[in-house]
Length: 209
Image (cartoon, rainbow, N blue to C red):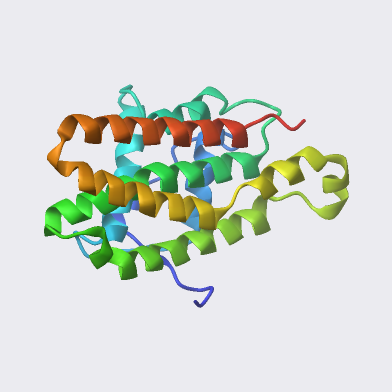
């Protein structure tokens, strides 16, 4: 896919920067915004993904609880030992493991279809997220000289896999869709998926200084 392709998301997502420089919560948002955005058709998986992301930001702004997977980002947002690349990858993981899962289920519910119908859209979103991960590494990963001093950071970043996160999100979305006839089980599964995503986010935010 061409490197110049942009995120196809609602224009509403191009909102002003809401955090001061260096705020860990804003690192992922800044890199994501820098990718360039254009309007997406309402109801697409890309639009649903954006809506899920925005709802979490709006909840934080309003002082409402945020998904468990994002709580470590707020807790450690000013920690001097956490590098920008860690905040960005943690935000990306929450976006995939939580937002993308629920976006697939939202889209299936609206269209009254099964996840298999969305495979093409899911792959497209995955390609866009891969471009975002590449940008994160290119812009935020310390240079070779610094990495010799910060080997723990190199190890930490290399343990996370975008491909594995995407595969897990696809599986979780399929399971959650299958549980639609059992609301209690679906809610429990969604909560456990959120909690599991939070564990990975917390790991990615391990101080490396």
